[in-house]
Image (cartoon, rainbow, N blue to C red; front, side):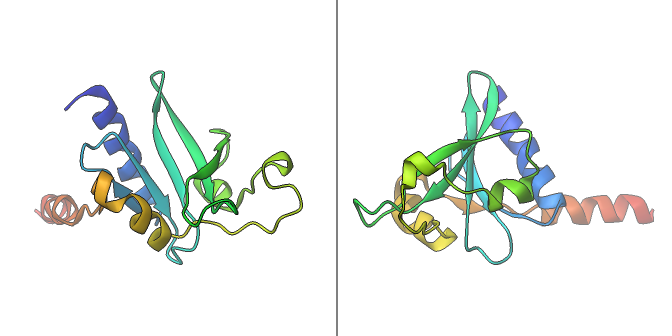
Length: 131
């Protein structure tokens, strides 16, 4: 496991422990998360050795997702989901956020995203705690 995969794995575990749903690309070096509603996503990846987060919204110029903006890593995970694009990016247009379904339809085949589950690890931890 390379350093990017390790960092992303740890982030995924932290997100899951806080109740978020997480999807990782097949290579394990980037992904996205959402809350239970799956109505808005935040993408994440490693840039210059640091995890960076991006909001995602649908562009009026094409039907898919892919337009985005960098989010402050100082925000909580929940606050990042509620953040809106900067005014210069959207002008007076109503923002339509990318949903989990939108993102998977657009990038699922190329990135081969899979939802993260830690059920096996959680079961192991429960067994260790009980014994």
